[in-house]
Image (cartoon, rainbow, N blue to C red):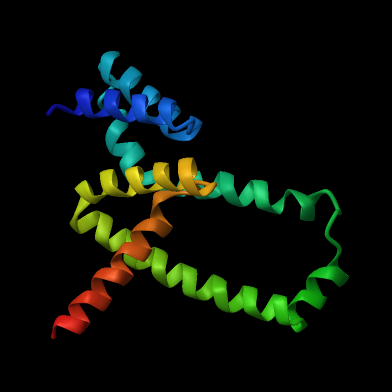
Length: 151
């Protein structure tokens, strides 16, 4: 099955599952493909994740920039139970994300399972798609647990 066919399938799945992000991503890639702008693909592959994370961080940090979150509130969070748990969770999540990135580099076709799982989570579990990297991190974790149990 060609890349165009797979992108059309992802577009249809995104539309069916009401996932604007998946549908839009598939649409943009189809447009780039049909306009023969293939030179953009290596750039997206190399820097797209960084660009996406930049926009995610920008949206998360807007309350800091607008003054909705004060320095006092931020300092309190470092000393509160939710704040300490957030620090620990952030550290663990980045480790999982790193493992997910390694898995995607070694086994890039796993992305389709991650997308289908994300769509299932959106459609039936009321989930929010924040990116395939954490899903890949969880998959890598589960694969490591299974390999550990086998041996």
